[in-house]
Image 1 (tube, rainbow, N blue to C red):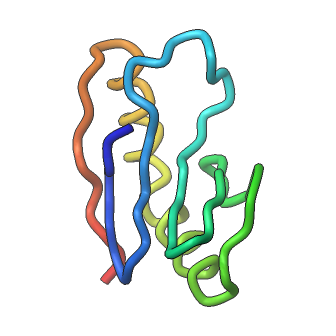
Image 2: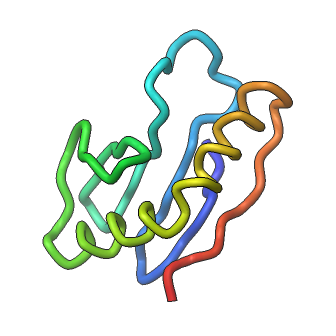
Length: 88
């Protein structure tokens, strides 16, 4: 699973070439020992993050929602991915 963005110790990942297993568009987030899965609207689907990192991830998702949609399409149609700007 490639890292599509990384900032302040937070890793954002998206499955690559995993057709059929994931119908809901989502990302995987890791911070230290914490993990969470988010949809592209900033909702946590599974897991949890500390409050500060949760806020940063939700802000990043809001800023990059269109890019996440495009990346999901690219990964699922072309088996390729691109990186998305980190939160600054």
